[in-house]
Length: 175
Image (cartoon, rainbow, N blue to C red):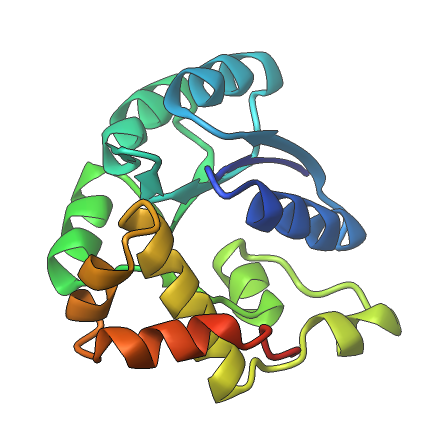
């Protein structure tokens, strides 16, 4: 089972590739649109995990070219900014599934229509994120999308700038 992961967050892409390799997938990673299309032509994957936000670009525009190149491929769109409008648009363009980040391995495997491979490491890898860790991840994602601008990030998160700065000074909570 060949899987193409199109994700601009290098750490998340590597984590997904590592976890899905343990589930029996042969994974390739692309971090931008041009690499994604080149890798898709070369690999001809059975499955594609596509991030909706690729740097400054929108992953939705990749669905049609991927679908025309790979008509039988199962495409799953991943997003940290879920909305009904984008879900409808993704399905209209040809995505098979739409998942919000963070996504647990069981949900991801279900979207890929595969069963999890039994192993002792699954228990550790698929632990549910604590609310504190989830908050930390969300803050980091919004901060990253604002190019590190704390004031803009605080306004988007509807919190005081000093509160955000205090939260950023804390070390990330472990899962």
